[in-house]
Length: 120
Image 1: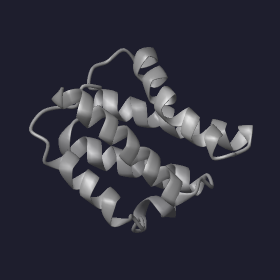
Image 2: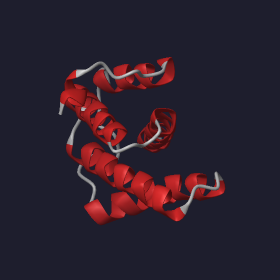
Image 3: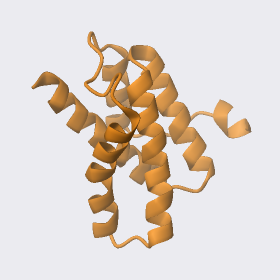
């Protein structure tokens, strides 16, 4: 559990997204969504990217479990709490061996799609 207290090496794009989430005036469209619907939506965004990258099925499943946890956070949290919980999820899955740049890319991609959906 020491990993949760150590600084997470985030790239500048992810830091910018987390800061945008902290300062968001309105919750994202995912907030309060039905769990199964949101998880399926997130999975539809991420799974083709992972399969297209040629990852083996077990690795794809691990990333989809990470995505499932992100969907729970986006569905139940807003603002500063959402940013904090999302960072904790990234820390947790980093300890399970997921590649940090891929995790951050997935997080930013989900954020980008939700942001577009929220604004529209």
